[in-house]
Length: 367
Ligand SMILES: [Ca+2]
Ligand SMILES: [Ca+2]
Image (cartoon, rainbow, N blue to C red; front, side):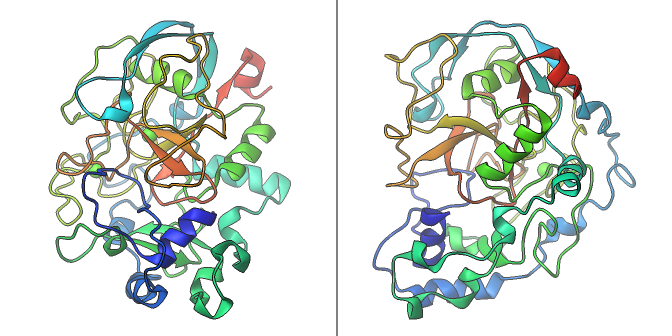
């Protein structure tokens, strides 16, 4: 959580060429804390428009959602594929031939209902539900805005005017967590939507309890591509953002924010929402680009020491995949299987979820 919270406290730079769907700007030392806090205060606790876009799954929606089917897992035969994509964003290249071993993968993103079952069974408390250690800010205590020490998470709120500043649409919202995705005054979680606001440790704890694991980037991308050719255009069968981000969401895909899992056509392997809806966490550490010198059989990305994220310097980010409901053509064309970006794994956000992979059929069935 360290670098992300520092980023929130210290303010955010202009997006510039760092086009991304992620929550976080670069942490810039020396920017007055008070100005950033003023920006956060203006947004804190507000329920965004997207909180009222979906009420309870399929009711009132033009789409029929296969949320129950999305709760199962499918076997993925291993094989070789071209990992990465050329001609879009540099961090997706160079394209290289990679081979992955067989595995099983969830058809859908992990839902709030599934995570609630885990919490009920174990009493687990997520990172976003715990107070923040003031030592991580590395500044005198009096310079830390009190709200930044409260339990909370990063929430997207659509700004009222066009802006290039992350701080105009992302805020650290005390009280936001998987239980209250929009903050304490917002709606409660909806069972069939992807669980969000989880740190990597929270996801790993769920995976251990469930008998699965977080996929590697190669496994995730192999399953997402499903043998189909690469594309660049914004897909119709994915929950992304139609219109001009961040101010005009035309929601021609029926959803302004998160959708219940399984509302869009599955890919060739029967997997839902690999692209769009929530970004999905992988176990790989992030570097901007694929290293052609690394092993190509079941690759696992760089070591923690070799991880480097220009958007989160000084801290090891993990790779997240597939884009989210915030990906728009004018801002972030990451609604593709090869799309990737780095994410501070110490803190969640309202657009990042995950799904599990399994090494045996028994584990995949939940046996
Ligand atoms: Ca949408
Ligand atoms: Ca997704």
